[in-house]
Amino acid sequence: MFFTARQLEDLHKSNGSNGHVVLPYRARLSPLAQDWVRARKIALGYSDADAPAGKPAGVVTPGAKPSGGVPSPAKEENAAGTVLWWCDGPCGPAKAAVTAQAKESNLRAIEVPADTKKLVSAIKLLAQEIKSGQASAGVLLVQNAAMAIVFANRCPSLRAVVGTCLEAVEQGIQQAAANVLVIEHPYKTLPQVKSLLGRFVRGPRELSEELRRQLQELSSCG
Image: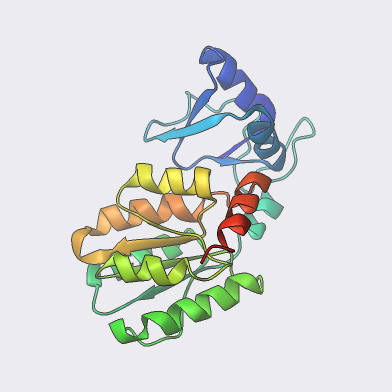
């Protein structure tokens, strides 16, 4: 389900114009809606609640013909790009979640053996693919997130966060434009992993100028 700038503005007004807008987890924003959020500095929240009865005015579902001059979401859907994933060993439930999510998203496995000793190789390949534009994001399913986070965030093209819960994923997307999600698969059930993946693959990853400046500033630290 796609929300336009007009729809977000209506939701914002109905919420008391308090700088917050709550959307369903499956919601996506049109390009103009993303511009509106940045310009107004609106904090987006997500919940499991469905959209209002019927369909809000100005919301376009994938494949539907837009009306009233609303841009078609087809190009935005294609622009989401490929999300690469890798697991560091046996992780049946997590891989099952990936397989299920792949029916809805463009997920592709990183061709590196599933071995904890291959973590650096997997991250290097992921960084190369994202830097070259061949992938938009990545998911690392690991037994322990510590080293994955340290290694991934050494790569300038990667901004990795740990998927401890949906709120953590949401904050990583909104505040850090995270393009790598690290999930500790021994501690997550299949539904939990699928929920985290579902939220992550749909998240916008546009790096703000302020965040870009801060990252550049930190890159010169010893």
